[in-house]
Image 1: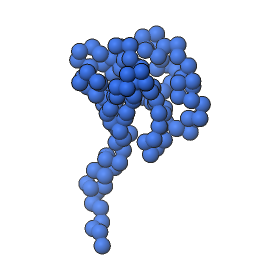
Image 2: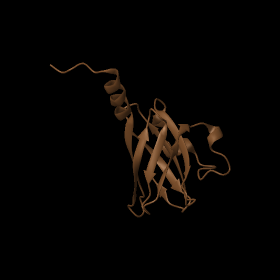
Image 3: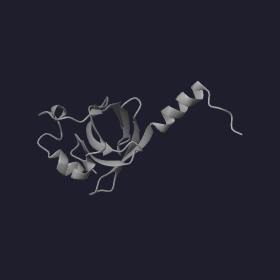
Length: 128
C-alpha cells in the first residue's frame, strides 16, 4: 500500500504536473525551439538554435497585448491559431534575453498541455 501524500509532496507533485514541454519547428530550416512552460507560474523558457535562452512570464492573450512594437502586429490571431481553439487557454509572451534577441509566442493549449502556437524572433525566424 502506498504511503499517503504529505502536503510537501503534494505541492511538489503539482509543480511538476503543471510544467509542460514547449517545442516550435521552423518549417523552412527544420531548426527547433525547445523549452518548458509552467502553468503554475505562468512562465515560459525557450532555448534558441543559437544556444541562447530566453525566459519570462506569459499572459492571457488579449487584443491589448498585440501593439505596434509586436512581431505579430497586424496578424490575424484566429488564422494563426485556428478557429477550433475556443475552449483552450490562450497565451502570449514577449521575451528578450541579455543579447537583445526577442522572441514572441502566441499559443493555445488545453489543461493537459496539448496545443499549438506560433513563435517569431527578432532575427526574422518563424516557428510553428
